[in-house]
Image 1 (tube, rainbow, N blue to C red):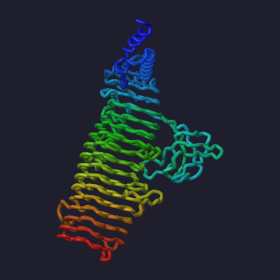
Image 2: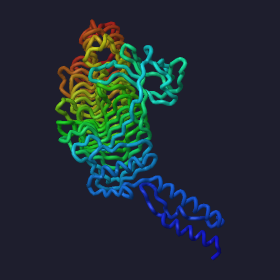
Image 3: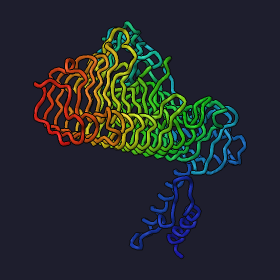
Image 4: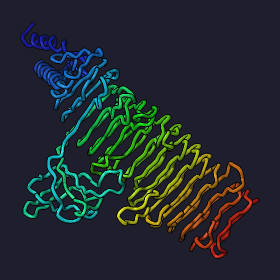
Length: 595
């Protein structure tokens, strides 16, 4: 055997120790070592050397908690200290937690730049009343006053000390104003594009989305975030409601976070808490039995977003026996409103209190292609398929079955904005299928909020127990609801009306109700296909080309005096006692009634 052939065979022998060897997601298979017959001996040597070097680098990149020096057994004994050390050592690497039972007695702190890969049967469970199993928190390193009031759309901010800032810093612009007493103060996160130390200004990469006032202590915080976290697999298990645990995983001041294929179960209040996280997603995770302290199973949040979390998606998750899959909230003592998030392709069974919901602490969300089955009534009297208290939302292509209360409720609290609700299917909502309006509470600080635009189009509503579509306003403080469009909806209803506009205090301006079909499947007495019920002026409504079937009235207004500059034309009414009722003659076009 010549020297080169001996060297090749020797390298093959060394590589055989690695062939087929698997660590976590890295596997070197036998075909990786195959060499073409057309290669020269030197090429084969170079190729094998490269494969050996690559394999060595991969093995150096991975830390396995069951290997030395950590030697975690995964046999339900307390493994906290060894896993924590492995996690610190895995900064910039991949930490592997194989299948096993791991008892955790104190929160595991996650460093920067880490991949945590857990086996599908790796169960991390709490010892005692541990608050979080995983905890990842950056920090605020400085806070500086803003020198003048800031408006929506601005990018340049004068600050008290520009020298403290650097290009690329993550910051939060904030002030102490609260739209609602139980919600956080205003705030939003940005990156710094440039710093002008001479002019004492910083320039943002994007424009401001809100306004900020020196009267409310407008400031800019510099954030030192934990960066680049990816968690895959595993089971994160709490001790149930009696332990009073807060959340399975907590992330605060974090950028670039990804959690996937993880099961989170048996926690009080929250499964995962996301607070001031910029860029991230939770995907293909499972949530079960997320509790609320002192309450029964199914009254906790699987995922809660808060305090200026931005560009965060929740997709392809499964939730069972929880209060909500997803909620936007925030601590009243903290800062920041959540924005630019997607909730899509999730499945939720047997939830209550609003399976997907928001509080008055954010805007600009898209909620689509979710399946919600059988929401239940909680002791707090809720049980909606979806309930949103934030404006500027798109809600579309969702399927909602058997809501104890409303299928979709949108009631903006303390902020102007819009809703687009289209192409949803809502089966058997016991109260109203779609309910949209302004919240009852008065505006703060003398401000008057207007729900700028509501578009409800192409929804399929099946046997709504109350109203099919219910548009309302409550207080004078909020002004008029304007730019209303209700079009091309198919509605079957058992309650009072297919579509109702109820301006109970401040009325509705400028609207179109067209192309809808409203079918009464209940008793006839008192039922109306389309009902206008003003208590103050409603102006500029066009009601046209609708089809109303069954009930006492096809289309009705309860006040001719308050229904102003409206026109009713081209509608078909079938099988009702009265076709079109209550409108002035000059407001009536050509409508058709068939008895």
